[in-house]
Amino acid sequence: MFAADQPASLEHVRSRWVPRVRAAAKGRRYPIPLVIICNKGELRTPQMPSMEDQMVPILRDISEIETCLEVSVKEGHNIQEACMFAQKAVICPTAPLFDADHQQLTPECTCALHRLFSLCDRDGDGILSDYELNEFQKKCFDAPLTEEEIGNIKGMLRQSELTEAIRDNGLTIPGFVYLHLLFIMKGRVEAVWQVLRSFDYDERLMLKSCVADLTPLKAAMKPGDVLELTDEALDFLTRLFRGHDKGRGFLTTDDLEQIFLGDPSNPWAMLRPAFPRCTRTVDGDITLDGWLALWSGTAALDPPTAGLHLAYLCYPKPIPSAFEIRTRPGAHPLLNPKIPMPKPAAAPKPKAAPTATPAPAASPAPTPAAAAAPT
Image (tube, rainbow, N blue to C red; front, side, top):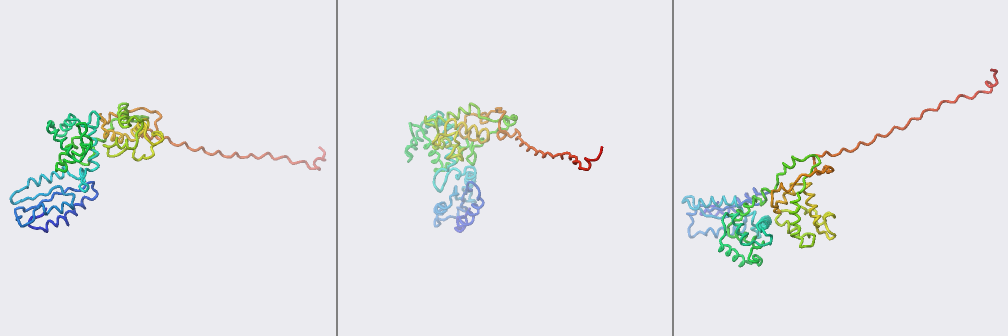
């Protein structure tokens, strides 16, 4: 906050308070949002520079600023608006969604919107029809779109610089993402947050329910049991594979990137570029058997991670239902901590060397004199 009749107080905002806020935000994923308030608005005279002229150079240098507003506490002007904008800056911050330095959506926001498009594209044709767009609108804002409003949205996208925003009279993924960018550019950040929160995203743009509660399943496990994916989950993954392999029978690195476009991370990124030989072709591409083997291995060794990525891939049922307990008598202890690790066999004790028994002493030979003596 600075005073309209004290220009030096505005310089304090730049030189003193902003560095302090930035120091407090050190280590945070996103910067702390700022709202700049000009108080004593009733004292501003025509000879003074306008607030817009004062704020332009500051807005250029300080990307954390969400809103600038002039108020008058004495006259009660814009007091409620100031409180509203301060609340909005905390509840609906811009930084997690929009990169002000590069004037584009953040990777996390783009990733989340790609996933939302996949959820709303019910027929999987890569286009949001009028019906699918209307269902999306009702889920997020609890109100349908009129035909005129749908036509206005398409007309606005057709007039944009994006050439592939509309195809076959429906919204494409680039058009869907660009539509939300327009909301942010026009100051409707709260609308984008409402969309994301309607699909269970939190302030870090992570799914709130992405970590499946597998405790009941683990509690029911016995020694020798392991958690594995159900046949239904494997069928889902098979369809996902078939939808991206383009009929070739394998997935390239680009195909994997496309599959995990709505997932913050690729679960097997650490394996690239050399996947296990049993999962890939000679050229290093993933086969269907290899794809399912990677998922099965992840589910057995780390079920929460497998459940996390199933959630991001839009598995249609509750994540715990994708797992089942199967008995594997010969399961390795690493797959089930309840199986005790076998103790190494004790080394055999060395046998003692046999002791030699002394031979009986031979009787001394008779001397010649003793032999000649009469018996």
